[in-house]
Length: 141
Image (cartoon, rainbow, N blue to C red; front, side, top):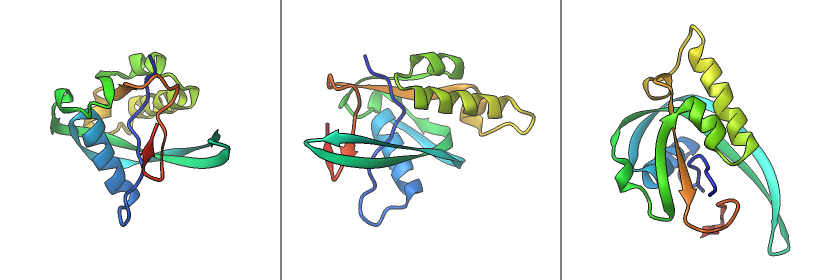
């Protein structure tokens, strides 16, 4: 089973923050607020003979409501797990490293937002058998 952090493609006119809030709500069923930006991951892959360059922007967020049972059913399962479990649960090393860094920063004296400071993160497993859920030009795979 593939486990990833929520992510998605902006719709025209949307800011990165608006995209993040919408995608987390759609994919996890949770309502969240952004505490702060938390870096990005850039990668590339080939899809149907075309090289695709993609950058995913991440944010530290605090859960403010919602219900995991309301998640987008393109995902087989969605979980809210302790950060130390997310570090081992996530499929991709780049996301595991990102969550480990977030856990380190949250444990620092400065702390972090209420949701992650409580030591938890949301992760989902796509219904498809693909190794990665990719959204590009409105197409999902």
